[in-house]
Image (cartoon, rainbow, N blue to C red; front, side, top):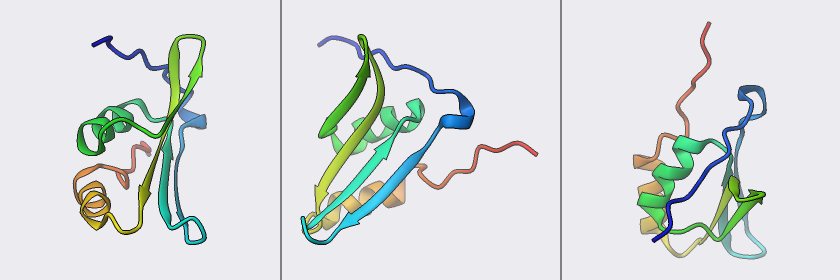
Length: 88
C-alpha cells in the first residue's frame, strides 16, 4: 500500500465543513486539516473523495449515509473535530 502524502494548508486557510444533506440522505464531512484527515481515515475508512494538488492530498471528503448511525456516532465521539487549535 502506497503511503499517502498530504499537503499542509496555511493555518489561516485550514477548515472543516460538516453538512447534512437531507435530500441526498447523507452526512458529508470535508477537511483539509492533515491530522484530522489521518484520524478520520482510521475511524471511517477511505474518504469518498480526495482533493489533490499534484501528487499530494490537499483535502478529503467523507459521505456517510444518514442511516449509518454507528459511523456517524464514532466520528463525532472519537474524532477531534471540535478541537480548537487557536493560540491566544
